[in-house]
Length: 306
Image: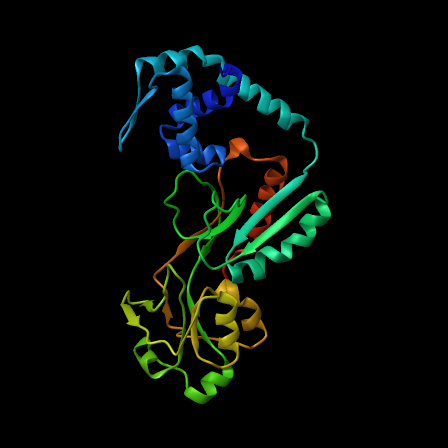
């Protein structure tokens, strides 16, 4: 016969499901797939030979046996909390792996320059950097910290706003010398336009507003489509067309004269927040905590619009 001590972890998962109000909420806190949480609950129910939860698509409800078990294990929450605080209080050094995810261009321009200082400050941390222009699932891919642009629908993420994304329109001097500078967004149909597109996003409708609050939306017929932000900027500097991108990400090219801003009398009506995100404070290691704090401070300082 199996012993109760083999199910202490399952009891903790059971309590966490009730606390979070859902299997997914518990899974996010634990850094586990939802299916693993569901399996542990089923195993616990098999051990006690009673159903503990009534499950529906909208809510979870304790059975009488579940309510009794929840009451009987009341001291477990305090035990776990005391143990966690004890471990963290004795974890003086930042040691271990920290995986950071970011889009390619943002990562190249703002994340990577911060890594040498972080490595110097925390030599026992192993940094794993993932640069990708697709949306990365933190839980599925073991990501500790990510930089995300746009509004965050997932409330389970711990987020800190570090900046704001805007849009601007740019072309190289060589391109403008050959094709001329468009005077209005309506003239984009006569130009070569470079468009970003990946599996989830295609930015082929460009939005403009002016001081008179006139708003234009231009459907772009792209001359070239790319799925990598770095390539998009490189093609623009090579004179291959007009690009719409965040001015933050082309500061270097603007300063060096490789790109020029166009449509000076127009601006983008779209503003999107930039967040630093992670899964949850309760399971954050000392290493993740110190890197999180350093990135918040550094990126908030850097991500200021020109």
